Image (cartoon, rainbow, N blue to C red; front, side, top):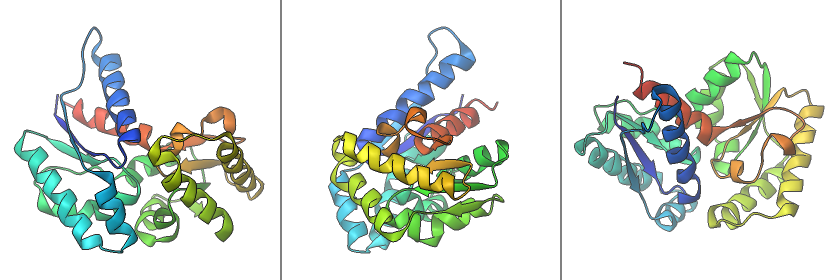
Length: 230
């Protein structure tokens, strides 16, 4: 079994999903009391949050690449950046280390393709919904990606940073997200990508009129599969 290195704390609320899902999948595959060989390097979220809002992505890259090198030095055989937004620097981290860094959009793209979906909605931070690094990576898998209207994007973004990364789950926010997902369905979307790892703390299948694609869970499952590939 390969050792999985998690660059976490982005935020720690969703890093817990990764740890749980990876260990669940390993136990399902190997049985008994098996669990994953894994390492977590958890960063101080306020530090990186301040950097992205100041558009200081070079410093984010340096910080997360440093975390990746530390995990590799400790024995990690593959790495994950436990976030959608921070996968903007995935390629920078991969150039710094000598082990694979599994991009979250590739894990999602493979799942969308496997389900035969041709058009999906995307919820996430403003960075993820509006910048090309994520949408183009998804679209390369051969399907259309749509995002909410501008005022809806602002709502989704602020709920993430003002509530979800702080562990705050509000019914009013769940209802607002569900309405946006309903709009996706009306526009022909066959599924919705929960493209912020914290969103799956708030939204599940029962809240959606179309299938949900939870990014943290799918990223973690892909990592467990790769770790067990031998």
